[in-house]
Length: 111
Image (cartoon, rainbow, N blue to C red; front, side, top):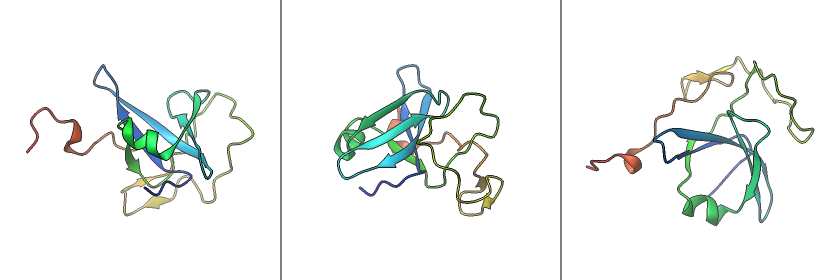
C-alpha cells in the first residue's frame, strides 16, 4: 500500500459520519495523520494498522483549509502549489474539501 504525504484518508465513524485525515508525514515505519476538522488532533500509526482499521483513501490531492483559525504545528509543510489550483482529475481545488463519497465498502446492501 503506497501512502504519500498530502493524501486524504477517511474512516466511517459509529455515528455514520465520515472522519477525514490528512497524511502529514510518512517514514519507514510510521505515518502521521491529522484530522481535517480538528487540526490539533494528530496521531501516528503504521501502514498495516491503517489498512486493518478500515481507512480508505479519499483523495490523492491534499486538502488545505484557507479559513484555518487554529495554529498549526511547525512540522506542517507549506503547500507546493497554489491551493486554488483546480485538479481536473479530482474535479476540486486543494482548498475545497474532498467529497465524502466512499466506495461500496460501507453500504448496507453490497452489490
